Image 1: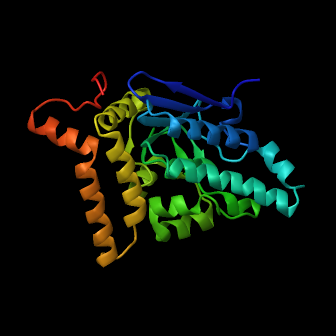
Image 2: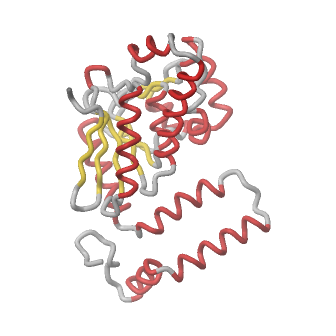
Length: 265
């Protein structure tokens, strides 16, 4: 039986995380969710991994929930459905809060939960052929577990339309909504995300992790005393940290910092 999620780690610190159910358009079920969650946990704990690219094998990024899984869910008890939904919510949160930057290489359709994966990534680059939809209402459901990430990506006003109509929209619309950061030809997708990953690999791993946490903490908050104190404490801690000191020294000495690929730690 083929693995539902493939992980490839490169010596540079870049890891490729591929959804591997191309015959099902990378739709996921409970086993695939568990495999993706386990892979994300491993990547978070591996200090050699500095950045992650999430993509799908085949023609789709992810078509969302697998039909066979949905048929099984129809017979679940409330407790079984709750455990199932929490597993998906936990996996999405792990992706969103991963201590390494994540680039979504959207190689094709990203529907429902698949769109949630894109929104939980830090950077999203897609191909012109990619299409998107939040389709849950058409089968009597709501986009509950993905909603925090989709709203953060496209805003509440756009979500009112696309959550309620469940209409499909193209890559150009996704770019305008802020769901995608770039659109590139299919033949150039992997090269483009690799170039973006190189930018990430040039940055301090500790600073990247702190910056991701900073964005989650600051988003939507008023600029008041507590927020000013938190941000001042963070920059003071980073300035005194080993990587902070090394980064400043390297800048002043006009050399590459020790965390750059190929450099000694």
